[in-house]
Length: 111
Length: 111
DNA sequence: CTTGCATACATAAGAAACTTATGTGTATTT
DNA sequence: AAATACACATAAGTTTCTTATGTATGCAAG
Image (cartoon, rainbow over all chains, first blue to last red; front, side, top):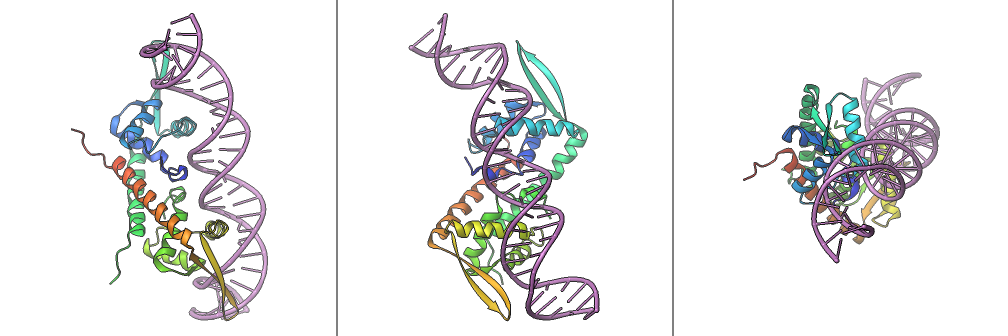
């Protein structure tokens, strides 16, 4: 696991990116998927996940549908058209940011 | 400028990395250097900078010396041996983290 | 059959790390 | 003379997470 505060500021984009990649997903599924693709290095806690999803819903970035699996409820999240746009913008910004950070970590010798 | 909260969690490492690269530096100098190498995309605010530097000093990661330029004071920061180690470790962690994030942003098609 | 773990949601209190605002004073430029 | 840059510092407020807690189902193991 990474130092807890590295995730700060990137969590929302990570979640949105998962919805973009995989379409309809439910909360728990997102945590498992992110854990898988990060080789266990990013574990999204429930206390971070659900408030974030609720916030995204309140902002109109995602819509939800409840589904029952037996007696157990699942809440599926889907990007809205506005959500697709937001996801795209945030992805570009994050990519740009990590490019800048990379440069700071591995400075090129100046001329 | 990037969304403010992207910087969270990376600021300390950015500062330490500058001290590693450039040796002895003072606070204001760090903000200018980071602004320069990030093409103006990262502007460290004073409210973030000084508390971070003070914390690093309290932890024994850096030492300080005051110097007078005319009547104006400058406080120079230098990495301690322990600081070099911390910087190295944090750099590796951050590099690893951004590699993971890159993978999330640009997923490779699975087999 | 009951204990434990995984699945699946949710919220509240607390901590960390910033932003924004404010303050002090010197030096240089317009 | 006024504005901007240099150079430090701290306090209040906000965001965003962690940690803790709560509810409930499903399944496997002993």
